Length: 122
Image (tube, rainbow, N blue to C red; front, side, top):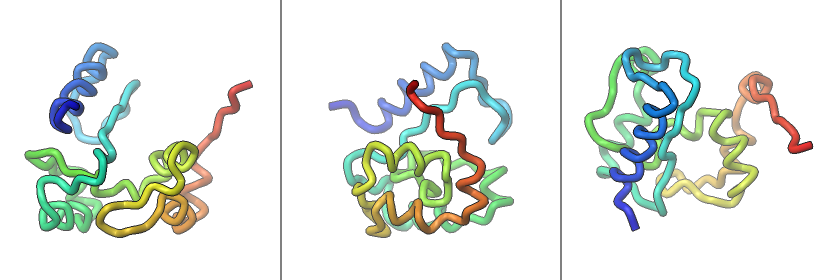
């Protein structure tokens, strides 16, 4: 099994092959692959995770962690992560908060969910 850092590195290589650059944080991009969780690991430690998950929006837009943080520190706030994750693993529980994906999704404001367009497989 690959270490989480190696998985993230592979995801970044795929993004680069698809033309992704990393010049500006949160810039529009064709491809965005993230490592959301890895087993139930909390990396690098609970204190670092908590620091980054509590970061104010203005700081999130300008600061980048120096190491991989797992689970993704803001997955519970992002409808574009939770909607598809709920399709494949609604019962997965966040290793820090203990909330299931379905619970995190249900806690999102309706306006966040309105941003998501679900495409049918037809």
